[in-house]
Image 1 (tube, helix red, strand yellow):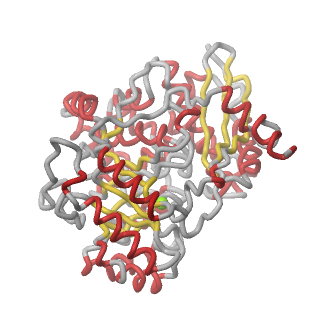
Image 2 (cartoon, rainbow, N blue to C red):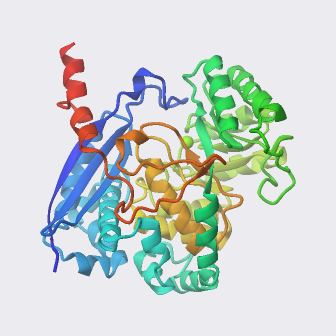
Length: 465
Ligand SMILES: [Mg+2]
């Protein structure tokens, strides 16, 4: 019998504001940060988890993580693993902590870090990467690991079970295929608002040469600038001369590209406003960007405004521009409503804004039932390491489809992780295969020692300068 005996948190902050990485219309000086937790047991088994913030306030999340983690101390790990859905309910059920949510804000993202740490521990205990642990579940086991509270009007446990049984036959084949090909990715690093035109040109050419054919650009600070930057990116991604040697242009009318406003080489451009506009402003502004042919506008307005997203989606439909959101959708209920209101084309789940793997599974099941594409949010620090697992679970066990999906990839800060994610020469995520990597989120001890706020060696030196 193994029991959880304690935990440790770390407030880790990286000085990304110095380089303009991560800048968009809303977030202008981000220090990518990790509110990091390790759960310990009375054996050598541990579980690592984190949630992402962009700097100040990370200590508040760490304080909340401590409160949530306390609930697990003394618990038997096998009891928790045998019913991860109930373990999740239990984590959320503290009546006093619930009041400071419920299921939103600091307490919810803290719960995400803890739930993810528990899943990491579960995967390590079975010597499998997290995605493999879950795809090897029977349909019944997977349904029991999810939560259906507050979403049974959109999907019942029985419907989820039927959906998973329907997909069970092809699992082995899909696992084999994705291990060989990798999972499709898109690149955001070229289009941060804080970058110069020269830097954008250089990074876009590198991304095309790296095999990518979906690109995202930040918009919303100045429409004329956005048109100029978008036209610049389009001039590169639409030009066959930049394609890697031996790669033929994609067919914009093919199944994987249809409806995505793809250019002549099959390249797709997405735009992201990070919530800067009111609803009518969003509509007017994005109509003005129709010439750069975006597939979708991401986060056009307040992330809680379900009906506003629906209004924007209907207004932009005649222009062939869709709507995507989700990185700030604080729980599965928001996704349920976005789907019920026909407000989105693409669900962008976040691995640690939702309260961990358990709640993500519920959203993946809903999205599969309603045929909504899932393109998880990544970037930041640690998010790419997390989300490849989630997209693999979605493809192999739940939706059974990956050809129209793309998983965000940002080439920042991977060196701080023991099992960093990686991209193959075709611009696709490699499949994590180390049996000891769990959820791939374990950070190097040296990185924590250097970047722990405010006493880590990097920050201590900065403040003494
Ligand atoms: Mg975004």
